[in-house]
Every structure is written in structure tokens, then in C-alpha cells.
Amino acid sequence: MKLTVKLFAAARELAGCGEIGIELPTGATVGELRAGLVVAAPSLAALAQSSMVAVNEEYAIDATLLRESDVAALIPPVSGG
Amino acid sequence: MIQLTDNPIDAPALLQSAQQPEAGAVVLFLGITRQFTKGRETASLSYEAYREMAVKELERLEQQARERWLLVDCSIVHRLGEVPLAEASVAIAVSSPHRADAFEAGRWLIDALKESVPIWKQEHWADGGADWVHPNGRDATHE
Image (tube, rainbow over all chains, first blue to last red; front, side, top):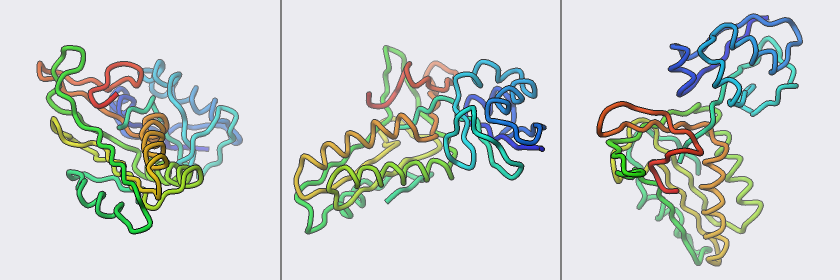
């Protein structure tokens, strides 16, 4: 299944784009998405480890299962306020 | 009330909506762009958000604050894009029948916002260059 991962702030600048498409096996987890993201965009390797992943606008853990229609996002450490 | 805005924050309007007859106390917090951080001069800050998720997270924080404290009004506004020196990037206005609830809720809300809401701050330095702020490192607004 193909998923699109939204990128923000430092992640967007490192990757040079606001989203990235990655191909994952059916039933893949957020942890596998994180690994797939680094393969697709090696410049994200360090940041991907310190970032959270959101699925459908909610924080997810690495064990969370993904579905084809999910909207994923890499959330680098936040610094609002 | 939750809002993300690309324009200057209208703090007097937030105070006005907080001043309800049921309230006996209003607390307003503004986080503003500070000129110097550890000796280095900031020209401005700019903010980026995952807007849909940030609104959801802020709504969740308002809900949690209302469950924990007796609040009359609760407004959280975050500005996005460039925020010049001395202007507010974030405003939190809370009102409550008695002051302890408003003080505690206001303090908790800004701390929680900085922990979990997907918004990112970039420093634009007066001597050139720009850095995304690491949350445990430099921070050019209030601590």
C-alpha cells in the first residue's frame, strides 16, 4: 500500500518537500513507516528517530497498524509558544 | 475558543470575551518575541504548524483544562508566520469564578501547549541565518 507522509519544519527543509510517498506492505506498522521514510529520504535519518509520528492527526506509537487511507505525518520535537 | 491566525493577536478582544459576569478573575498570558537569547540577537521568529492537528490538540487541551478547573471562558490563540520583536506569538485568556483556577489553568495550558501541540518555531538571527528551535535548547520567547 502507498502512504503519504506529511513533513513539517526542519523535516520539510531536510527532505526538500512537504510530503513524501512511501510503499509499505499491507498491515505495516508506524515503526515500519518510520524505517521506510529514512530509506526514501536518508537526510531524515537522525530527525526521524527523535520525531513522533501522527496518524490521522493523532499521535501514534510504533506498534500502531496502518491502513491505506491513513494520513501520516512526521512530527519533529515541537517548539510552539 | 481555539484559533490559529496569520495576523497579529487581538489581546483586548480576548480579555473582553473572558470578562463574563460569572467570572471573578481573568488571567491573560502572552508569549512574545524576545530580542536577546543568551547574548545573541533575534530579528524575528516564524512559526509553522500542522494546522488540522494543532487545532485538534488545542481543543483537547481546552477540554482537559475545563475538566480540571472551573472555567468560565478559555481562549487559546497561536499566531503563525513571522512574529516581530515584542509581538505576541501565543495568547491564553482564562476566566474563573475565583482566581486560583484561572492562574493554575493558564499556567498549565501554556506548559501543555509547548509539550504537545504540533507547532514549530524558527529563529531568524539579527546576524544572519535561521535555526529551528530545539525544544530543550534556545527559546526566544518566555521560558
